[in-house]
Image (cartoon, rainbow, N blue to C red):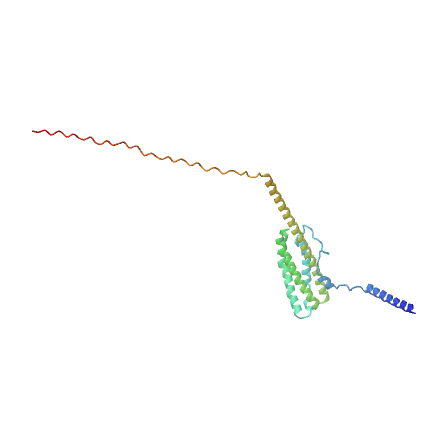
Length: 243
C-alpha cells in the first residue's frame, strides 16, 4: 500500500513537471515591442555596418537625415490628442526641420572638405546627437498622443538615425586610433635618430685653461742727469792806487 501511494505521488509530480515544461516551451518569453527595440541602448557596434575608410561623413549621414526630414514632414499633428504634448511636438518638429535644412548642410560640407580632421567632424557628431535627442522626444510624445502609423514611422526614422550616428562614431574612433599610431611611430623615430646622433658624435675633449698672460716688468725711469752748475767767475776789482 505504501509503495502504491509513493508511486502515485511520483507519477503526479512527473506529470506536473512535463506540463510546466511544455507550457514554457509553447509560450516562451514575450517578444519585445517595437518601441522597446527602438529605444534599446546600443552598447556595441553589432548591427552597424562599418563605414568604408574613405567614406565621407555626408555619405554616412545623409540617407538617415533625408529619412528624418521626410518623416517629420509627413506628420499630421491635427490627428494627435490636444494638449501640451502636441504643442511640444510641434516646436520640436520645427527645430528638427531647421537643423536638417540650415545647420547640418554646412557642417557636412566642412567635414567632407577636411577628411580625417577630427576638429571638423566632432561638431557634426555633436549636432547629430542633439538631433537624435529631439527626435526621440517627438517619438515619445507620439506614443502618447499620435496614431499608431505615425508612431511607427517615427520609430523607423529613429532607428535609421541611430545606426548612422553609430557608424560615424566608429569612423571617428578608427581615425583617432590611426592618428595616435602615427604620433607614436613619429616619436619613436625621432628618439632613435637622436640616439644615433649621440652615438656618432664624439664627446668634446676637455681643454686645459690657458695660462694667464705674463705680467710685463715695469721699468722705472731714471731721472735725467743734471749737469753741475759752475758759479760765475768773480770779477777782479782793480787795485786802488794812492796819489
